[in-house]
Length: 158
View 1 (spheres, rainbow, N blue to C red):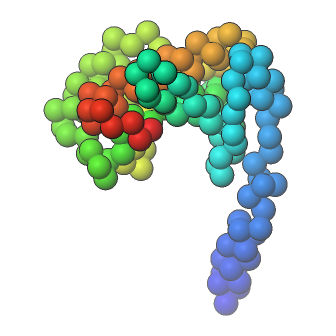
View 2 (cartoon, rainbow, N blue to C red; view 1 turned 90 degrees about the horizontal axis):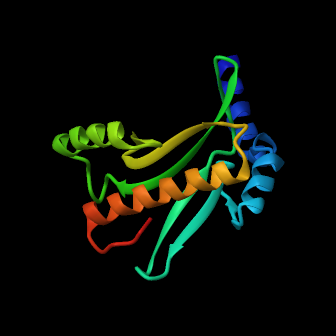
């Protein structure tokens, strides 16, 4: 009985406190603003930036993680951009091998699959400047949008 009560309490707290658990990161907000971006904060606490390509009439979503992960004493933050949703365009084995090869060629970032979504992901020290964060956002957007075009043609859903 106690285990059931704990599970119910945990579920209630999770539903009542998402805003409290996702504290805003003013250092990210400052760097995004300094880099010239407007942004929204999504339900997960990540910062969404939309990059526009007016000549192509396309946009690309790029997220900057709202949290950091510490690796061997270095706080890192992820910049990621979706390129394909698996339910619409599942990644085949041949495409996965091609993506692994592309990872080797990228100067910045790598392809990842998470929850059936293909992302270009760049993991950076959290100490990067606004200019360096801007470079990572642009790289993620360009690589993900190019991959989206190659997978789905003219579709611009992400």
